[in-house]
Length: 200
Image (cartoon, rainbow, N blue to C red; front, side, top):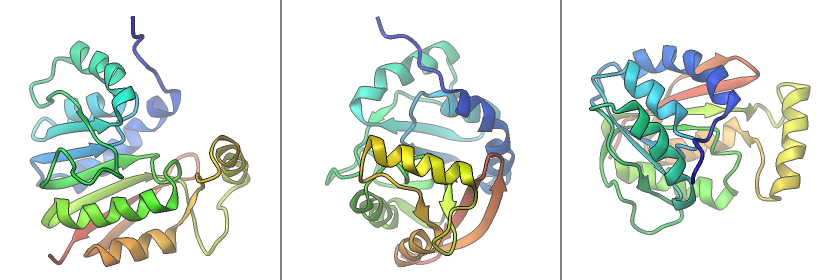
């Protein structure tokens, strides 16, 4: 029997993230969350943003755990999670007003991050929002000793994983027709980057 997954980090950061999303997604009615993980964020945000239809997604192995959170929450603005691998040619969602992702870019390899942003250009409607939470480097430098240690740990798990440089990610976003709206400082040396699609 699948045990409901739990992440302490999700518990720690969900309220600060929600505070930003309340404004960033104030005029949005549909969000695709990519890399839903445990499902904690999805349920928490959907419960506190009832005007939004919140679509969770992840690779197939994480869906049973996400479903346990969704089944327990029984929220009317959440459907079943969909299987989504960023490297797949066809994604299960083809158009959305907004995309949210948390702690995914440093897990993906560089090719996956590039693919992710290319698909964003197709997914987002004009004026659509993209919010991305996680650690980032600036000017090629770690912003804290803890982030440097975390990056070493990531490399030990997967040599393709690494904290990404903000400047590189911003260049990918710009190429996808996204303009940076805000770079929000978050607890524990993380950021929440907010973009808006400005061109087709």
